[in-house]
Figure 1: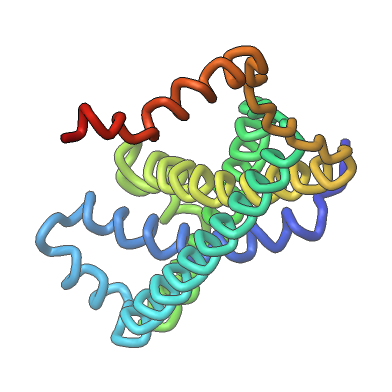
Figure 2: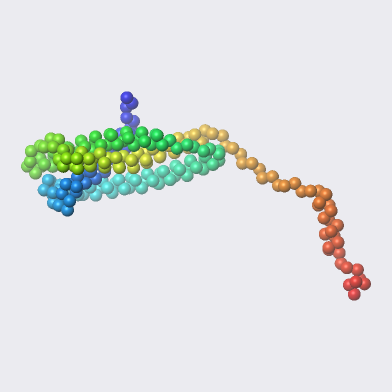
Amino acid sequence: MRRPTLRFVASVAALSPVSLVLAHNLVFLVAFGRGAEAALRATGHDEGWASAVRLVLAISTVLGLTTIVRLSHLWRTARRLERDRSLHPQTDWRQLARTVVALWVTLAVVTAGWFLVQENLERLAIGGSLPGIEPLLEGGLAGPVLVIPLISLIVAFIGGLFRWGITALRARIAAAKAAPVRPKPARVLPPVDADHRRSDVPSRHHRLRAPPAPLAG
């Protein structure tokens, strides 16, 4: 089994906070509906939690926009180099699927772990006892056991798409730089018929001559 790379670990670390806050709030929304906000306050989710959610979403938005700009730059560079070398790269969709699945499984486990840690600490903070894994099982199939994998899949797909796009574009740029530049074919003008050009000279000469004097009078 291959050890996870540093980039993979960094991707999980960047995606797990947004996965946690989305899954956490959706769990309460599914369980309590319009009373989700009151239920959050009753279980120790004060203004600090709301501020943390806003901060995580803001940072994730900035990171997403930055990644989109980076992808756009890499794509333009790759296309320019490939046009100069007449290359036609193939898209490796299987690599995208492997990237998303690996992120999804890891992200779901990490999100579930952070969800349990947070719920235990918050219920302990309001004077309750440690519930253990009970928060993960509350709500049955409509609770965290379904919401966390679903949210993790959505976040993993978006993050995996960005990660795969950057990796694939870098590989395309490296391959294009290693390929020789194909010179563009010179533009060849159609040959001019020499006989036609000579025969056309008298006719143009006659057209330019003035009519005889008697006729002109």
